[in-house]
Length: 88
Image (cartoon, rainbow, N blue to C red; front, side, top):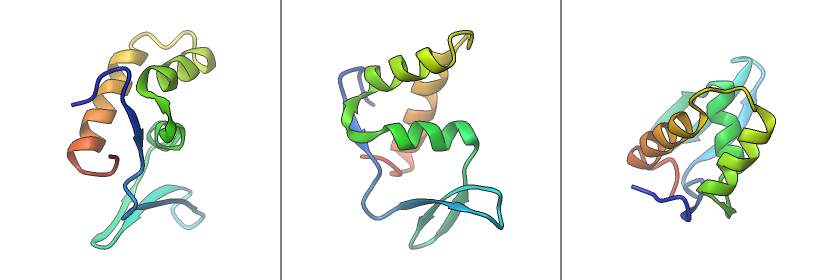
């Protein structure tokens, strides 16, 4: 798994885009498509290959200062996305 200093980005085999028909962001890949929650899309957008995981968490903490378990939720999502190879 990743540590706070890890710098991650979307797997080049995947593409994220907004789909009006789905009214949400989706992650497209050769085998199909995944509909993303607004939160998942926001995290993936911030994982740009430049910012560390901790910097992403800091940005989200500024946007959502009252989110009670933000750190834990972001790490949990990143673990799932990493395990599914959405990010690298």
